[in-house]
Image (tube, rainbow, N blue to C red; front, side, top):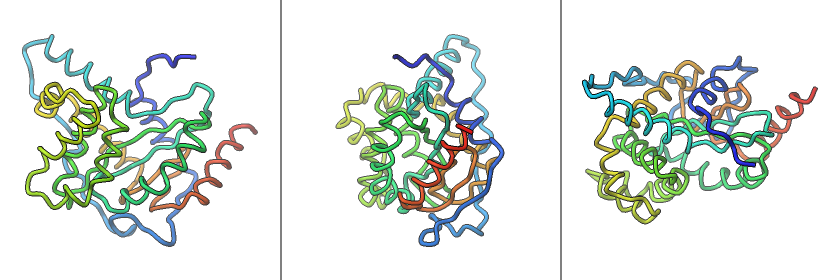
Length: 243
């Protein structure tokens, strides 16, 4: 059964801001910053340039909606959301995406047991993290978010040390099947910045201060949490919905 169009940013935001039932920090990993550190979130309010051309504004809005929709796995039968809060230049996020996410996908996402969404949290200390987020979100406009997200994380050690990562990200997008002409136009526009900055506002409100973090049915989970722990928390959340 096809999934009807939904504003996933609104849905993910609602799940993000649900009353938290508690927090959990893995004893082994605390994310890219210590859990007790305050992370300054820059550009939490995005003011797009005022345009006198309503058609241009409408096109940017449509682009943002498409980019937003395509970074979520939605199943109408799922009762809970699992939301990844991540920085694509964070090494702990890379480890989680390479080691844990594939297991989570096979067990809970592909089987339709949970809805899953991605929220951008580019941290100030990572010089390419904002551009990486833009690269993935502009690929999302063309339905290639997950492919480019994976390619960015898998090659993080190569591009994180570059002075300018633009060309590298373009090559990753091209290899993923993205039309690079439209992708570059998106990168140079304000279209996906509105989504990224809205993510930052919601991340701040939910209380996340390090990456990676997850929100499991309203519960903030901080750190590179292993699959065994995630499995229990997700199954407990699903079971609670059935009561």
